[in-house]
Length: 347
Image 1 (cartoon, one colour):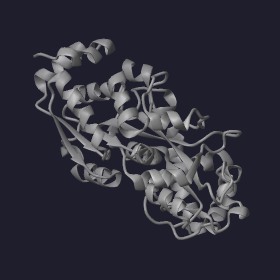
Image 2: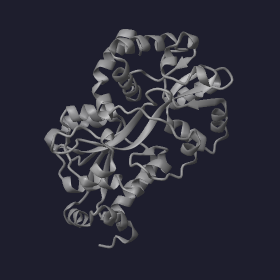
Image 3: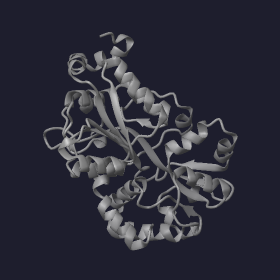
């Protein structure tokens, strides 16, 4: 087998013997993925080039991936599961769809706050990239200081100005789960009622739609994950650049608990036929090369600390203070959050 320059990440991580053993036995690595980013193709290609292990993928959204794992049960061919939200990762862990992994590579490179529960046998999942949930505002109609905290989304001064996607979308469930951990149930319910009261229109669309609604004046303040804004910032389309010119972005709560950060992560499936190769793939995702793909390809921050990135949009956003709440705890809060959303009428 000739691995050439792609062998370097294996050597650096001390994974050569495992890679060679996996290659000798694995006909293909089966990945169930909720990541729908074209730039991820380079990730899969690099892994296969380095190890000689072909990849077969099932692509669907998070809920469809989890539904398929449930329906297939012990007969599932899935080796690796990739999801794009802490709430979904926690749900899959609780439902017994993952298996624990003990890996020096992953435990050294991935911070404990970006891993699932470790019950003594290892963590159930690992976060490989992060994205911040920020506030965008219309620069012509809103002052930055009136939209630089999550609390201000519910402030009466912003009545009729706020737009969001569905409250039950995982990105919002995770933010609200973080607020629940910080504020407690009663204050979080009060805050959510205020957000609903401030809405310019019912929740609809995705994060990019919210940014464009702010630019057009349909609303003046919105929530978005940073990578959606970064895509517009890096776009070659004149209409996208026009949108960016009209909106400002702020990392909320910099004087307080910090900005909410969500995670995209992966796990070894409960009944993985190719466990060794699946662990190898997760360790690859923690390598410098793979982390660079996350940052430069899909505008996400690497989970591995201290890596330099070459993404002009992320660099333009600048450094920020992130909240310190464990991703696993945020996921655990999602059931309570959904009950609160139902009570306050947040669709």
